[in-house]
Length: 169
Image 1 (cartoon, helix red, strand yellow):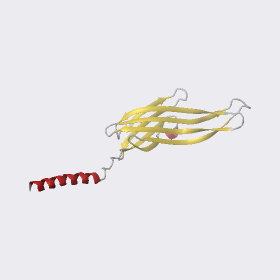
Image 2: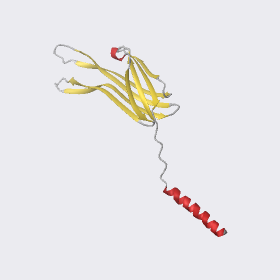
Image 3: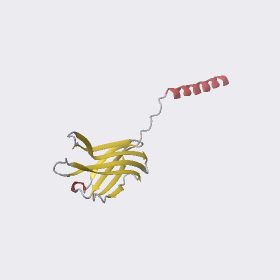
Image 4: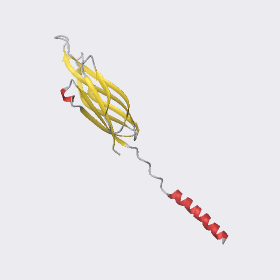
C-alpha cells in the first residue's frame, strides 16, 4: 500500500512538472501608453495667443516625433534654389509612471521673417527666426505644467510651452 501511495505521489509530481512545462508563458505586460500634449503660446502671433496644440501617443520608454511646417525655397546668388524646413518640430521621450513621468523633449520652432532687400541689384534673402528648446521635466500625469518660457530680446517674442501627460492605457 505504501509503495502504491509513493508511486501515486511521484506520478502526481511528475505530471505537475510536465503540465507546467506545456503551459504557454504568461503574456508580457504591455507598457503604459500616454497622451503627450504640448500647448505653445506665442504672445506676438495673433493666431497662437490661444495656443497651438500638438499631441502624440507614446508608450512609457518610447519616443515620439512630430513635424509640422513648410519647405521654403531660397534663391542663391547663382540663381539656383536651396530649400529649408520651417515650422514646429518636436521629439520627445517618456519614462516612468504611474505617479510621475519623466518627459524629455527637444522642440524647434522656426519661421521666415519678411525679406529685407539689401539693394536694387542684390537678391533679397529671408531671415529665419528660430527657437530651440530642450526640456527634461518630471510631470504628474493629468496635470498641465509650464515646461519653458522664453522672452527673446532680439525678436521680441514671448513664448510659453505647456505640457500635459495623460495615461491612456
